[in-house]
Image (tube, rainbow, N blue to C red):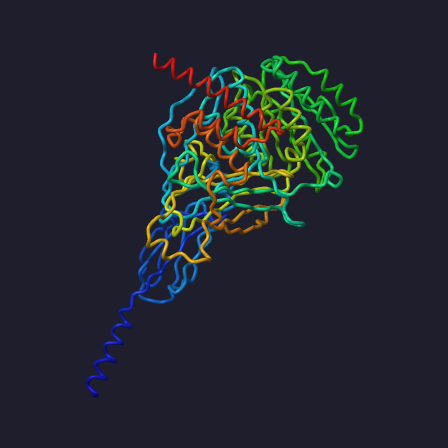
Amino acid sequence: MKKRFAYTLTYCLVLTINAQYYLRGEIQDEKKLPLQNVRMLLHSNHMIYYSGRSGGFGISTGTLKDSITISLDGYEKKTVGVNADIFQYITMQALSSNASKHRHSLISITKDQTQSYKFNWVVSDESYFLLVENEEVNAVKFPNTAFSLNVNKASYSNIRRFLNMNSTVPPDAVRIEELLNYFNLHYKAPEKNEVFKIESQYSGCPWNKKNKLLYLNINARKLDMDSVPPCNLVFLIDASGSMDMPNRLPLVKAAFQMLVKNLRAIDTVSIVIYGGTIAVWLQPTSGEEKQKIIQSIEELTAAGDTPGESAIRMAYNLAKVNFIPGGNNRVILATDGDFNVGETTEKALEDLITQERKTGVYLTCLGVGMGNFKDSKLETLAKRGNGNYAYLDDIKEAEKVLVKEVTQTFFAVADDVFLNVHFNPRIIKQYRLIGFDNKKDAISDTTGDLEGGEIGSGNSLMAIFEVVPQVTDTASALLTENDHVAQISLNYSLNNNKIQKEVNYNCIDNFKEFAGIDKEYQLAAAIAMFGMKLRQSKYTKSTNWNEIETIALQSYNPKEYLQNEFVRLVAIAKKVYQKKKKNSRR
């Protein structure tokens, strides 16, 4: 008996000495986004390890408790204690010197993403970023994805311009998230004292019966117009020779004059122009002096070259001189984007705006024109300027942006807004984010950073995922009533405040067949299909224009002008693209 006890004791001691623990965790940045290739020194054995593509790591260790030193270029080196009993979430802080580096801005971050082959489209002298469509992602390996939210709507009105000319649309001009933003669908006001309200709907997918759709609807609070802060607005107007066409400077003048009519006495307007030279055309003037401001705008004429860079600097300086603490300080740039003097590349302009936005001055870009329209430059400026971007194709669009939706356009309720979505791999096998496509050069840069956007008052944003559900009996057996389709974390900061806030939301399994969901969700699907068809997406190759038109007709509200117009554009697109198909066959 004693021998057996001694043997058992010895055996247990040997097991303890040789015990193997498994240290698991994930390394993230300050925005809770995974960091890959982080160097990890495990102190117990002095071995070097690296985090994986999703920021995760799994290390065998002989001790329950250990410590590691982690390092990555551009981030502060740190040593942390770790425990094999607990899944470790480790956050790394970016070096302040790294913040000033030029890094590509990503719109969405999804692991295991590949680059689809793309044609390089050229439309006259217009420029668009080459976009890479989001691919399907394995939810078991990579359950987390993140994307930036903003209220840009320029893509829809630009598409409308092409279709109204009975022309096909350059695929890279189509940004599906901006098409969805345009309609402010399914707006539901947040609870009192809340900045955002989130809703979700799980439904069937009309273009692929095997898959399903997960709609995410994010609603921003509406500001009371009687209590919105005073405005310090600088109209930065391109009056160069390239603007000397009816749909350019005359349209810009009419647009700004409409805006001025709704200003208050507490608001201030200044005007900077550039065309050959740059000048302060109108010194800061109270919104009460409407006729003076309107007359000043009316006297503008187009001539000369385009020193856009110097004009941007002057406009920001003027905004800073008249800065209103707690107010709406904003430069509003109206141009065709054709800068040809000074810094003219997207990168150089991006660096300039990145520095200027630290002053707390926002930037709104209004694009006009055709033929040499520089969409890529204006998108860059608005993104880096912590602002928004709209394209004015006619006077009705100018009225929509600057009068009917003035609070949505110019009054931000939150900055640096981005969404983290964590899918439940027990329910979701694969997922694909529709829209929010990255620029080709950004996705190929592994140092790319996700940068949140600005959300204006009363905006409703719609994001749609196409998902492949789990269908195995094993997966179903593991489900509990507490399982959710996905968990959402909405991250944002209040205006000119760097402190990040967070709203969490669980997407319940509220599945309904497509025909049974809210009409505005159905319309959102039609808009997404419309965008994918224009982008020549491989995911809608089997979808025809008749199917898109049918869903649009069944879901639109005849009393809503914008929805009526969408149905009309679908009909035009059907004719244009069917004609193109017939000609190509010939």
